[in-house]
Image (tube, rainbow, N blue to C red; front, side, top):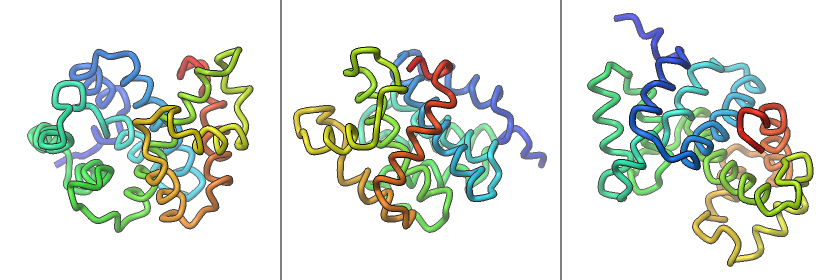
Length: 189
């Protein structure tokens, strides 16, 4: 069977848009995709494949937001559409409660970028210009200490994600900020 569709962004984008209508969730998917693709390039991996895993990691969340359903329903949908186990396992592993081990670089990268991309976006939104150009590592670290700020974002997931990649936290934050800056117009930041 030809698996080229898993590297076809438009094919995957159509699936994302079929299930996700919420603008914030779409922007989150694009932000995580941006960071993961940048890491794929850095690590010499398949940029399109990794990007599409990131693009679809939460595609089922709007329709199936509970821990009992997400990402399990998405996994079933992607299996029905011919996505291979490697692709689907990477998505499954981003949620700790699935108990899918993060035993590949792709799985570790997706988990490391998921919460951080959302957190950086939240930091952008409180900047006077609402531009990522104003965001610095120190401001992200400072906001991480503010438990009331973006309280739904797990600080532990951000810290542990960098550790799983064996990259210092500040370096990981800077890398994701830089990646998001390069794609700021598409991200609306």
